[in-house]
Image 1 (cartoon, rainbow, N blue to C red):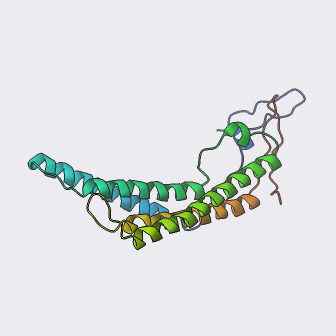
Image 2: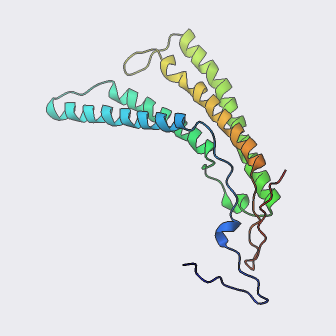
Image 3: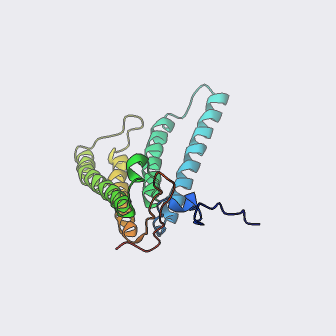
Length: 197
């Protein structure tokens, strides 16, 4: 049963508040990669932590390598989750600026944000390649278990490049998405369903 629609003087129906939010861009393709990597990393973290707890409970020792591996996996998880959040347009934003103004302005702010994320992670990718090269050239080893440090650092440019591509994809999709006009102070507003070129 549909609830009765509230009417205004003059017979104009009140707009649905949910229809005044900015439209989300079309979904990104291939998000199964980030989703499955997140599941795998979380499972590894849980198994490593559980094994270490069991060993500590039944013996006087612990696995020395667990802390180093766990820290690496948590950093990797943050990068993977960051990529998924960029692709799904779920990163935090200052809503006071992002959700105000007309549809064209809101779209411009959204695209500007995606472009800045792409530029930031492209820069991180380029700079971290030098870090990996230095780790390899100087044969740096990890402080905990003594494996080559580049085994850990090589993932930073890889996932920075992935986030850059996801942000560029979001930028392109936002160009095709429609953004509805917000309500003004009286609660009235027009909903734009047409795509903005």
